Amino acid sequence: MYQPLFILCPGRSFSSVVCSMLGQHSALHGVPEVNLFLTETLGQLVDLAERKRKKHMLHGLVRVLAELEFGDQSDESGDKGWQWIEEHRDWTTTRVYHYLCDLMGPQQCVDKSPVYGAKVDYLERLYRAFPDAYFLHIARHPRATGNSLYRVYAAKAALGRIHNFSTDNAKVEEHWIKSHRNIFEFTDRLPPGQCLRLQGELLLNNPQPYLQQICEWMGIDDSEAEIEAMLHPEGSPYANFGPRSAPYGNNLGFLENPKLRIGGLKQLSLKGPLEWLEDEGEFSRETVDLAHQLGYQ
Image (cartoon, rainbow, N blue to C red; front, side, top):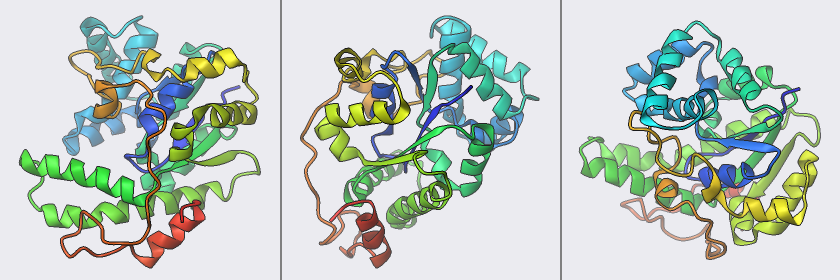
């Protein structure tokens, strides 16, 4: 029976490091962003990536295929991964995902594709494929998330990839709200115990007790040896740059420095001007209420 763990969160919410940590447990296999449930078929996903000029959307899937189907993440295996995708365009994305789970053997998959939170439709497609899955809803303070997104937009603007920076700038807060609202709408319908919510800052500032809690929730070994292994996300086969044709799939900063940095995440305020707004406006009432719902003060 497939019982993968899906990490649900907006982008820039520690998903790369958390997924890689959990994937170091002997019963789990953490993968980069595979984005499979954006479409019904693999061919549709390829077409979507091409239409949006975001071929990197497929890098995570290519890397997983290279690692599990072809034995490593060499340039040659990466090329074979792209070829495999082209040869299986007619497969449903559910069939592809089940195939990957079979390749993982007794290990259960841990998936961290943040884009799933963009639409409830994506989450419902995921649920139809894996009705017995575990769902870990990870939060990050909206100020920290906004600052991180702002730096991404600013870097893209500096490279000429964004031509209306002020408009994208204004979407920073909206991104956080929309993702969490969709995740709440989806998970509130699940049976009790199928979803666990956790502030990412708590996990990364003091990982041992929260990793143990996650293990107990999933019914897997919570021994000292397993917890210690999960403190080393750099041990993941995806905690580095992949083959030439598919180097990404995880957060760039994580790929450059995948070691866990325990502590140091400061408690932030929901009050005060926002660094990414030119008029120094503050959080909306909707953001503050949602942040309170997630345990932030």
